[in-house]
Each structure stands twice: as C-alpha cells, then as structure tokens.
Image (cartoon, rainbow, N blue to C red):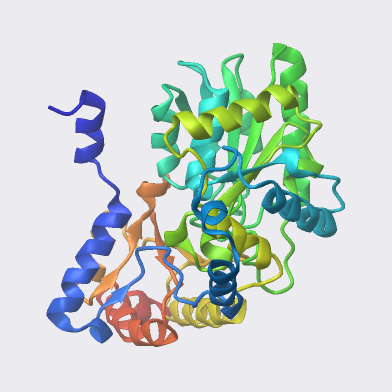
Length: 400
C-alpha cells in the first residue's frame, strides 16, 4: 500500500501531464498535424549547436573517472566558478564558487532550498497565478502554502494582500519572473516594494524570511524587456535557475542555486543546501551536463522563434474577440476564458483538437494557459479551430 499522502497525489496527478498524454493519443488518432497541443512547456526550439559540440568535446577529451564520477554534492568547483563569473559580468555582482550550488534543474533546486529552510508547519507564500507544483514541493517538507490572490489587471504581485498575510510563521516567499503562466515580468518597482515589505516584516517578527526566485525563463524576454536581478532588491534571496528553457534542455535536468554572501546565515545555509542535495537522493547534479554548461554560458536559443509565435497567436486571438495578456517573457499566453468555468471552455476547445490548460491549475480560475513553445505551423494551424470556437461562443458576432 502506498502512503495516504501519495494516494491523494496520485488521484490529483498533474493536469498538464495528463493533457500532454491525451495530446499524444489524439495525434495518433487524428494525425499530429491536426492536433494543436498547447499543454506542456516543452521547448520546440533545438538546443544551440554549441551544446552538442561541447558534449562531443568533453566526452572525447576528459578523463572518464573524472567525467562520470562523484564530486562535491554542490557540484564541480570550476563549473560553479564559471557560472559565478558569468553572473558577475551580467549583474555587477561579486560571486564565487561558494555562492553557487549545482542542482537537478530548477525543480530540484527548489526542493533543495525548501528542505534546507522549512520546519513542519512553516508557511510559504506564493503569488497566484503560479506553477502548481510549488504546492507539492512545500508539502514535501510539511510546510503550509499561503496563496496571494491575483491582480488580474496587471498580474504583478498583489502586495497589499501580501503584506497582510505575512505572519511570524512565514519562512519564505516564492516568486517567478518571467512568470509561468502569464509571461509577465515583475517590475523593479514591484520588487523594490516587495523587498521593503520583507525587510520590515523580518524586523517585526525577529526572524529571517527568505525570498526564493524561480527563474528558468530569465533569458526569454521580448521587445527589449529586461528581467531585474532580484537580489539587488532583497539580500535574503535565493535564486533558482534552470537551463531547461534557455538552452532547450528540459530532459537533462541541470540548473543551479545562487546564495548571496549577504544572506542571513550564509555559511550555514550553503552547507545545508549541499546536505539537502545529498539526502534528497540527488547526490549531485549530472556531471557531464555540468561540464557542458560551463562551455555554453554564452550560448542561447533563438528567442525570435518564440517571439513570432507570441505575436501571431496574440494578434490572431484578439482579432477573434478573445481577451489575452500579451506576454513580456517566457513562452506562455494567459487568456481569459469566455465562460465562467474555464474547464468547460477547455472541454469545448478539445472539439477542435485544441489542448489548453485550465487556470485553476495555477490557482487562477477563469483563465487558460497556452504554451506557444510549439512549431509555427501548429500556431498558424490552430487559428482556424480558434475561429470556430469563437464563433460557437458568439465572440465574432459580438464584434460585428
């Protein structure tokens, strides 16, 4: 028999993953070109050529024992140093290898951070809409998730409610920018206010409150938008990063955590992150991919590909009468459901072989997420189905 906690998790298994599997079944039935699967954030842009070249070079020219053997739980020293130097060049920081912990993707990094920070019953705050797996990550360590309701005008964090919901049990706050599912980038003004609130609450409650910033989409920004470096606004920040999106390597599970030296209890926290990496069973991040990343710090995917999809989809949907938030970053479009029950709308879309993810998955009912990290042909082909859907809902007639 499985645990009672797992029984509930199995019953409520990921909606996104379930839709992805449904999409595969539909593609087998109707033909892949006739199914428009926007469910999973699985990058369609190939990894940069530098990645494959680095893999070949490393495998051919690195001692096998060193390449495939154990290393420090926090990662290879030279890889951590290279990442630190890269960040210093971008953000004017002064990091070294001691500030970097290599992780099994951003998800692994978040779990390591939460394991190191949380005591049972501690509260973790997140701003809706957010990636629903955060709830499970917090539950893993018997923490309590506190949800801040969304500001559906701007989708910037609702700081008034946030200030009211921080308590003496608040151990950390999770932010995600560029945001999944909205594509919104949290502004410097927002982050400055957020940092001030946290500083005041730390003093009021006499405890450290860490800010964990989940940043797998940091490099995916459009129209010249810049993604602020969150530690500039709050010293007790832990940055979680993944190369899953920026280098199209989601299956390789490689990323890192940044712990600024200014963070409270830096040495103890850094040591705890290393121990958490080991005892959670990761042991260390994949060795080969660590070496690959160190050679590809200046590489990037073709963001213009996603940008074309973004503009085509946004313009096409708004012309049909749908209400959308135009993304500033990431590769998701968050669309308001024409029906009060967005799950009913998702069901209607399936009639036209369009797969969308309900906003309730992200703690924001009444909306749907569209992952446009798909082929351009999928985006263009879907618009005929969206037009039929809009006509069925009376959106087109309403615009005439």
